[in-house]
Image (cartoon, rainbow, N blue to C red; front, side, top):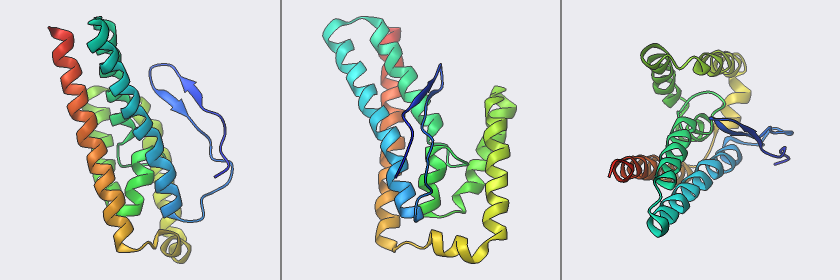
Length: 171
C-alpha cells in the first residue's frame, strides 16, 4: 500500500495515512496488524532494557507502550483493531462500538468520540454500498482463522506485557 510516513502524536502513538485504498479487507488487515505487532516488539525491547538496567523508566515505558497498542487494537473504526476485525467479521464492530461508548463514559476518554463518529460514518457507508462492501469483505475462512488467531494472540501478549510491566514497576 502507498502510505505516508508515521506522524507521531504525543501520548497516543503514531498515525499513518493510507494514500491508496486497499484492494480487499485481507490486504487491509495484513497491513493493520503490522503496527501493533511492532508495538509489542517495542514493549519487549523496553522490558529487555529494564532487565539489563533495572531502571524503572523502562518498565514504565513498556507499560505505556502496551497500553497504547491495546487501545489501538480496539475493534472499531479506523484503529488497527477495527481494520483487523473487519476481516474476521464486521459484526465484531458492534463489540467495539459498545467498548468505545463504555470507555468514553467510564474513563472520560473523549478522544474516542472522534473515533466513534468516524466509525459510525464508516458503518453507514458500508451499509449503503452493500454489494461493494460484500465483495470487499469476502475472504477465505482460513484467512479469517489466521488473522483472528493473530489478533487474539497480540491482545493476550500485550495484556500480559502490560500487567507484567506494572508489577515490576511497583517493585
